[in-house]
Length: 393
Image (cartoon, rainbow, N blue to C red):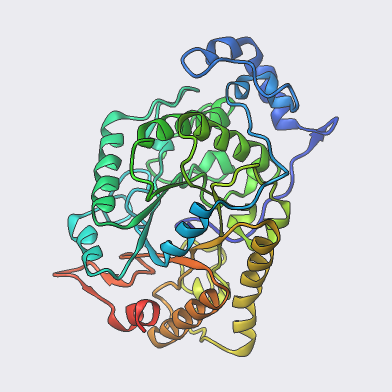
């Protein structure tokens, strides 16, 4: 998600040594002596034929699936993409370092909002990395796993689709850590990502087909040059546990449509593509305290120029999805509450119409925090004008 303490600036590419990222070379040197030990308890070591430098180290325990010749989406993936419809993100709940750190927890009253049939899908962002052991095995805390189980099962019990993702693994992107987030040895950051996916895939492999797994939210920074490799390894890890589960993948630069051309898709038919769209950023993030420098408030929406900005990325995503034969899901868009409410309503309806005119489903960011359509204070109530702009006729 585009949420808390992130900005919209890209990161410079890594330095390389003989064509290999320096960081990777350094990691291999540190890990060579322990690679055999790290394989124990994961999967049999062997890797994917030594095609990359990282295959010499512990990542070899998580071989990548074949990629670069995707077959196009299965009928099941196409049907699910349509069924996702107009969804909502349960943001700022399980994606802070600790549940409650950002003012919200997953309450039953939020889940009960699904009873009216307004939301056919929920995207559930989860920060797994802060609830797993700090070593390469990244053993996920059983109490946290049970907590996520409870939320997933109650959401599925409402009959909706649930997109369960991995969110805000700050060290993986190279970002500064959030308050209450612990650091780990840089040498194990990437292998932890895969170790967590092994556990998540195994844990949920018998859940309803309406549960969809999203590999990672908004890869950027350190992942810019590593993403295709790690994504293929993550898909391979999930597939070894759960061969048919639908999986969502997206591009770098915070899931920007502009980076879709850099994406090397796995040769897998049960995939959906995702992009995020917060254009025009000067409007959607005005007054947001985590943006540096802060954007001035008072920005209006929606001029012809702003509408063109909003449509541009969607056109790129639509064209790319058509070219490769996979449906595109807009996993996040929204406007921060510092903007004028009437302008937010115009923006929300305009973005909804632009997305749907291109045949894509979407999930609004988010339910009940700074971008929210629901006011959780007191007895709680929907912000009716904003909700109607998004989910009304």
